[in-house]
Structure formats: structure tokens, C-alpha cells
Image (cartoon, rainbow over all chains, first blue to last red):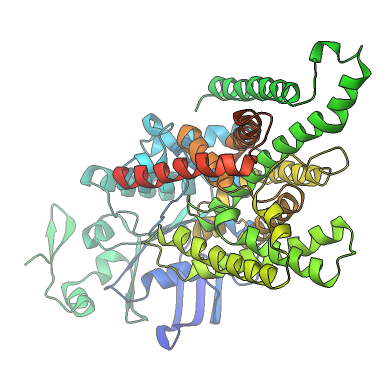
Length: 252
Length: 322
């Protein structure tokens, strides 16, 4: 369980997160939703120890994020950042193997290699393993970074808008794979999503942020209502049930 | 890149370095015959006192400059920087100049230490400068580096001019190996040792090259790796300036060529970077010895021309690709 208590965060003079108190359950896929600038990425980065906690407290299971050594956190939690601009030329296979870094520090065992090559298979990258990162498409690179995080084999997986650059097949494939990780490997996943239908289709738990505050949170069937979403995004949004599944309409 | 191809590359490096080294000890004004090495004491003496040290100095210089270049590129996350184009060399010269003016009697090792410290400060200054540049404009980084090193260099020249040390400065500016004899190059072994030590941190540098976010996510102490890298660069730069002088572009050209061929996984590529740097510097030294035989052109000058052309080609070629 991730528990966040009285978290405030400011960038310069702008207050980004206001007094957030929140728990994210273990063993589920939690979607972070909300309009642009709501503080989703900031919250994810703070949980992932990418920025220092200014005031408040975040703990992942029994570890306080602010005081736990990075190496130990990296064995508990893997992170896929929103924008991974890469200046170095690594092959996809090498990048994914570096996911074993927190465990092996570069001395890869056959077990490490087996996990990495399994990750390549899972994320449909085996054919690309010898290609350099600067020679593949943005979506393929995105999948390579998710595969690297998967290779870390952590209890928690944090992803910031991983569906960016992905086509329909790969977006669906990635979400399905994440849901499988939760179901079969008992991982816990926190994912920033813009696509509400993916949130409705795959998430076990939804947290909606609005202007740095938690607007609502809970099971998607209960909290993703037309009224709540229309207020959250300040736009007319309808929800319908089609074949027993919730579909969110917002295009016109 | 498959394992067999990498070992092929390593083998090629060893063979060509051996050939260049043999060529290097055989070329020079004094008579020398490798076959009489053990029968003619004069030949052995020449090898041990002059040709051998000169060859080793060129190899050590080239290898360590190329490696510090690639480390700098990973730390700055920009392919177009190296210690010689970002102020590290000029900052080392400031240290040397200050010691020469204030404490001329200090031993060479103390001078080198002073150069190392000012070089470290110079690199940190450049890193701070490169942080504020917009990441969307990668070419700004090398340009700002050139200006920064130009400003520092102008300061060095001004002080040297005022204090009648211009000639002295000239020996640092034109890197060459003609003055290398046994007893006058051994500091370079430290540069070689630091380079080998850097190899043990190769994976760390590779991960750091993925950027601070990914480094932190993998639990790598990013600042610590930065500190190691900056120290390696400062030590190598100051040692090279003190013993042989300025050799620009090696740290720029070699890593870029190797990166194109085999990528940036330093665990694999660092030996090739070192070997190619060593080979190119030795090649330029040999070339400088034979072009105007029996006179010499400093290796730094030869590589300045060669490296400048390759650098331009890399810059322009990149724009065409992008």
C-alpha cells in the first residue's frame, strides 16, 4: 500500500499539490486521471522519489520514500518517465538488461538475462533487440522503457502516460499486459492515463486529481460517472454501458 | 552487436596498435634496427630512452583523452563536447600559469595537481553553464563550450603575454611528443591508470548517460557518478597538458566514430575507444615525423587539421540525418 499524508508541493511560488492525503491499494492497477496541470506527474514523481518531498510523508509499503536509499527503493519500485529523451546509443536489448541494475549492478547472471529476454518477448521487442534506440520509432522506444521497468521485477510499477505514441494494438496490448501482471504476478501498478476508456476498461482503482487536490477516488464503476467527469474536465462527458462495459463519450 | 564481432573488433585493435607501435619505434633520425635490438646496445638504449617512451606516451595520451571525451559526452549528454572544447584544458593551463608565476620552484607533480584542481573547477563551470541551455537545442552546448574555452584561453594568453610567458605557453598549446624521453613522460601512466579505473565504472557511466531520471529510477547515485567522471576528466586533462600539451578533438572524434559503429554501451565500447584514440594519436605522431623528415610537425597540429575536418563532417552529417 502506498500511503500519502498531508503532501504539499510547490514549484517556485506555484503551489502544485495541496494537502494530499491518499492511499493506493496493493495488488491493483490504479489509474491517475485529471486535466492537464492537475499535478498527476508531480504526484507520481514524488512517489517515485524523482523529486524531494517538501512537506508531508509518502511511504511505499513499509518504506518511507524520503529516507530509504535509492538502491533499496529501486528494488521495490520501477518507474517509466513520461519523456525519456535519450542521447546515448544503446540497443533495445542492452537497455532492457539495464533494468536488472538494482539487483545485479551490471554483473548479469543467467537469471537476469532470462528475465530480460522474457521482457523483450512480453513487450513484442525480440525482433528489435539489436536495434539502437535512436533508430526505432517513439512507440517502440516507449515499449522498450516499459520492458526495462518490467525487468526490474519490482512489487510496484509506476508509469507516466505510457500510452503516448502507442498505436491501438500496442496500447491495448500494454494495458492488457499490465492487467495480467496485477492478476497473475501480484504486482501493484500506478499509471497516469489520459484515455478515460482505458481507465474504465482496465483500472481496479481510480484517483482523479484536479488543480492539485484529490477530486475523487474509488472503483471505476462507481466513481467514473458522467457528472463527476464533466466537472473534473470542465467539459460535457457522457457515460454509457455497451455490452456490459462502461464507455465514456467526450468527443463532441 | 554479437559477441564474436566484438572480439573481432578487439583483435583488430590489438593488431593495428602493435603494428603502429613497431612502426613508431623504427622511424626517426637516429639509425635503428629492430632485428639488432639484442646484439647492438645502442639500439636497445635508443628504444628504452627515446623511441619506446615516445611511443608509449602517444598511446597513453590518445587512450586517456579518448576515454575522458566519451565520459564527458555521457555526463553532459551531448555528443559534441570534449575536455578540449569545453574549457577543461584552458582551465588546467590557468593552474599551470599561476603556479609558474607564483611558485616556479614547485615539482612537476605539484604543478600537475594545481592544473588538475583548476581544470576541475573549469569543468564544473561548464556543467553549470550547460544546465541552463535549452535541451531542445543540442548544438548550443558545444558552441557555448567553444566560447567558454575561448574566453578562458584568452585570459591565459593575456596573462602569459603580460608576464612574458607566451613562449612557455606555446609548448602547452602545441601538443607533441618530440620532447618525450625516459623520465619525462611517466606521469602519463597515472592518466593510463585512471582510464583503466574508469573502465570499472563503465556500466555506471552508461546508465548515467540515460539521464538523471532513469538513473534515479534504477537506484544509481547520479551525483556520485558525475563526481567520478569529472575527476577522471580533470586528472587526464591536466596530466596531458603538463606532459605533452594540447591535443584537441581526440576526445570528440574517436567516441563519435565508435558510437556510430558499436553504440554507447561502455562496457563493450570503451576498450575500442581507448585503442582507437591511442592508435590515432600515434598515427598522427608518426605522420608528423615523416612529412617533413628530418624535421617534425607536432602530433597536435596534425590531428588538429585531421580532427577538425572529421568534426565538421560529423556536425554536418548529423544535420543531414536529422
